[in-house]
Length: 474
Image: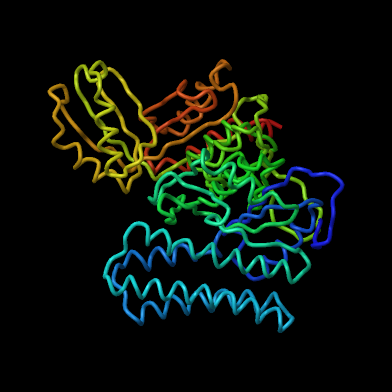
């Protein structure tokens, strides 16, 4: 790849956005794998990085305690120092280079320590301060990786979101990119023919404050950058071999999935397959940018994508491409004789939940009930919010928990005869009761809500029906 600063190109080509997440930043040895992956490209890259594995969780836990003192601040700074210095000591053998990297890390840690000391003095952590502190995981890793790649001849510069103008539309911990403000700015600031390293996970909101994009937000950063510069590809490097036909930790003999449409991949990501942040598909779909997932499993230098995701629609023989699940789910059920005909109930509830910062995963309605699918951690608070709701038509508000939602995903699921019956037949053989079934809300998915205790057995049964049945008959 073009690694030297005096390199010239005969023509301008589209850049590739590459993202390395925390899952491939676990061990110091991962850096050599990243170096091999970067060297496999033949054009300039924009590399988006997550924090080193575990750092964001550590900072988040520190902030949740809410009470700081000199000892606790010193402890978190020392933890970050030792972790990042370990990566330096193992990967940089030249003393002058390693000293330069340590100096940069120490400067950033001093900034963080001073900021935390200020929070200690005011005995408070405002939302914008929470986001600013969490962003240090990516600030540290981006500088560490940038200096590491420079040491090995991959000439690059760190481009902070606040410097390139990656603007967000609010300052909460579930923010999003304001593309109306960001596209021209990002495109201009990343226009030079060179390699850039960008910390993921955060942007800059009104008043020049840091706002973060939530868990897995570095995927969203990478997708947003790709949209802003109209990238050729978005490449995500993972510790797994792309999407599979089900969760390999639960189901035996899963198979890799070579191709998914944006819609299929988004459904799988939203309902359990934690490979990609679900919000990452929106920016790239608008620009028709192909997303490729690579496994960082070896250092051979010969890589091919494990899963390709684009706008193409591909229907496989048995329609279903993957079965995923989500057990972080509970139902808040509103019952009433004619609740389905009462206008405005969903709007009222949604407004109350939005005000409380509660995300609605899905809504399933009937003539006599409205079922709000929520995260389990939000279910008790949501019940309290609606306990005194003013509606003469509601007879009961109840909670259904200890459940899982299964999603069978594949293009053509609503068009092929017999798919639903095959799924239900597989569950029936295992005597698994289906509480709720939804088909038609999505063109690519069928949802089933079952008892959480049946989840593993259900996944195995459906997977066997669609992917292992032929083998069993031989």
